Length: 476
Image 1 (cartoon, rainbow, N blue to C red):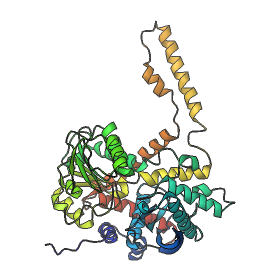
Image 2 (image 1 turned 180 degrees about the vertical axis):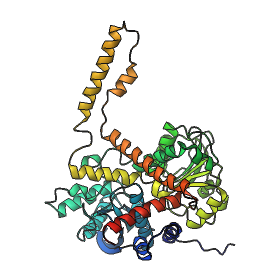
Image 3 (image 1 turned 90 degrees about the vertical axis):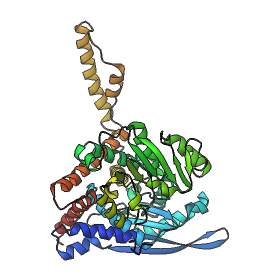
Image 4 (image 1 turned 90 degrees about the horizontal axis):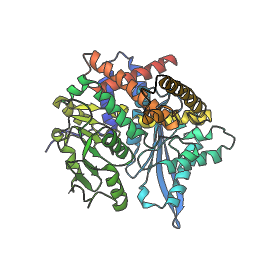
């Protein structure tokens, strides 16, 4: 049995940070300032439930205020602890810096199993947690802006936004205190799908670069690539759906809490998702082979592995047996620092979490801007764009008629061309542009510096460089 100690999630983040800063010329004091977590607030509060007072423990960690507000999700899970929250806050700092979202890094968590409580009870708990954070400005449009994370979603964000508005009745920007809200509560089109869509855009950009694809011992395009997805939650579901339906990938296995479904012919993600909702798991799904030990399916042969659930699922215990040529970290920290070393030496290419799952914070940035500007994207220009496009189409059709109708515009082209960009199209366009730009910055560092062996180190170098520049501009 191996005596090698597996690093914790926070230690893994520090190991990867240290690996990058060794290649940089930073003053030791600035390096330490960027690495350490600025502050973590721990709150213990009571809520009267089922005739008794139940005490809950929650955290809100601020890693870096090189830019404000700070940004980061709130997760509800019974495994939440201070180390995890601080590691996630650090990743948020680097993630925002990498994709040039103007935020510092933060994260929150509440130690709770949401499955054990009714919706009404969860609302009471969420509002009380929000109250404790709001009164200390740990939720605030210009200082600290949460978002959904594991175990939370639009519903919880709506409760938090309403709680803030009740406590700050004269704040005209109250809706900007949190992102990931429902559309009717100040949310933005495309936010629910954003992280999964970002994973798709990240892979599309990777496969536009034949040299990078070759480094992963792959070739061609995404079409036909065999994909295994671990975790069919919000991120995994949307990533798997878009990759299979729009890019021609074949999802050959899906791993969930109660096991995995394997089908080499490909799995219909929409169909499996409905089954999971109705049956609380994948067990019994008729269109594939059920494997009770889901973790073992991580080791199946595939082209692309998408860990989209928890941190640390690829570790020293299984890294040697991972066969995927390409891993894209849709979750935060799914590959430990020790496993990362093993996989890199084997030639596996890892698209790192701070880039791969940055779609969520990118579209959260768009939502925050929308809330501060108090207007829906596309509202001012959409119809004017359509009118201009119509003028071009009319002119072309007049020209065709003058030439004896020798050619015509196809109805499909007209319909698509004449449609001005609405909020969803603009959000997707902005997300695609962000993912492409960030990947190219990473790629440039990866290929042009002889001392950078992998995309993760490249991502850290770009991100830490941007954070360092911000601190220097503040006089530090």
